[in-house]
Amino acid sequence: MSRYYTFSAADAVEYARQFGGVEDPQSLVSAEEVGDGNLNLVFKIRDTAGVSRVIVKQALPYVRCVGESWPLTIDRSRIEAETLIVHAEYCPQHTVKVLHHDPELAVMVQEDLSDHLIWRGELVKGKYYPQAASQLGEYLAQTLFHTSDLYQDAQKKKSEVGRFLNPELCLITEDLFFTDPYIEHERNRFEPALKPEVDALQADMTLRLAVASLKQRFLSNAEALLHGDVHSGSIFVAEGSLKVIDAEFGFYGPIGFDPGSAMGNLLLNYCALPGLVATREAADGREQRLQELRDLWLSFSERFLQLARDKTQDVAFKVPGYAEHFLQQIWHDAVGYCGSELIRRTIGFSQIADLKNIRDDEMRHDCQRHAVSLGQWLIITAPQINDIEALIARIRQNG
Ligand code: SR1
Ligand code: MG
Image (cartoon, rainbow, N blue to C red; front, side):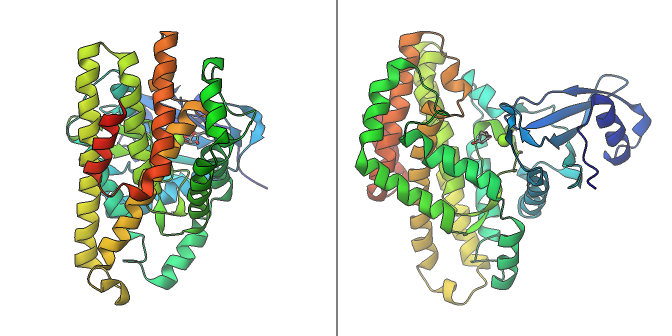
């Protein structure tokens, strides 16, 4: 008999008193449900002075933004907590701290990050955090290198792949990223003005072949323990600080998927900025996004190579030139996954504020068209784009 029940605000307070690790548990008196993601309940637990002290997060047995008609395993809560715990082992400074978790109740208590803000909200307002992209690159390099075959013992890794199988959440990504946008599907969401672009995209067989390869590698390449959903809504930022949250899509997959998803979110904002802020600010903001793209990739790749040089365990993988070769494969994958993030967030089920918030219809459609065409181009030409400067140069040419 499962102990699972859905928490009320009062349950969340009681739970935080027991497991929140605060010195004065009785001072915790109220809970505010603040979950604005697609899947879970999230409570801020406040003390008598109204200060938020810890977060209680619970997985519902269905997709929250749809309802009970889309059931979803609560095991995702275990996967999320265990992924964050592994990632915190290698990059504590950029991973939200899990204070306690209970797989049966699908609940976890996390550190409060009220002194941070969700990066997406800040990007939509045109705000710039100069260190955020490098910090994200550091998080990705540390977590992905240390869980890859370059570092992990091969036997241990096989059992870790089993611990993090996550089939239901992976299926969501397999469908929403690589299938739905390329066929007529009831989950797709786009306005009639975009129908010609969507028809052309779905008829583009070169594109669909390239997407098939991306999907195959997502399904088959268990390279490292990914976060699995690195978008700007899964990241908290503050002056000089960045924390990654929300790892329920964690699994062993192709390393390029994580940096690629992150790059895709920077480029979605790049495409949306002319519709979100004044012309001058949009031009500056776009330059900042391109700089962030560069910072993200350079900090990721430089740290990954340094870790490979210093810490690779396997004798065969230590052969000179192998780490560089592996990194080049990761790069090409990342560019392809970046393109698929642009497309699925623009015409698929899971839309984002950057584009949705553009009030002027024509401007919104233009920005959406830009995101779709940039995504198409990235997916098709990924094997020919050899480095970050070539990518940035082509994005500039693309408008
Ligand atoms: C049904 S879940 C839709 C999306 O929300 C999550 O954050 C993931 O990005 C997923 O694709
Ligand atoms: Mg999420």
